[in-house]
Image (cartoon, rainbow, N blue to C red; front, side, top):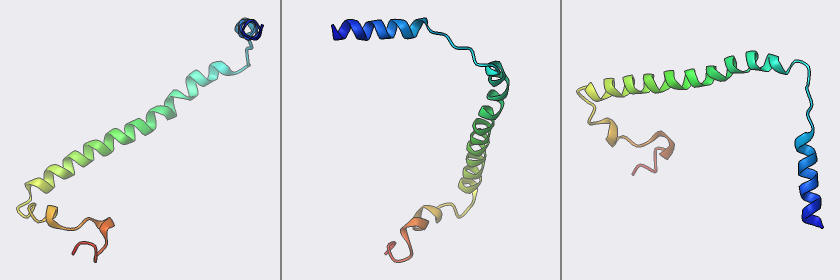
Length: 78
């Protein structure tokens, strides 16, 4: 009985439709801001790659890996 009731509820929900005025506007408004964060992340990745290449090309690049990480604090490095 319970299984039949659940199936009847889901069937009834599938048949219901609601149209909210202005929902078509979302197709125009939402994609534009949604692309913005993706573009920022892409720019950051490209900038990171350029900076990394410049650091690796520097004559003293061998020093950088030996420096302690900033989050480790001054005393934790020793």
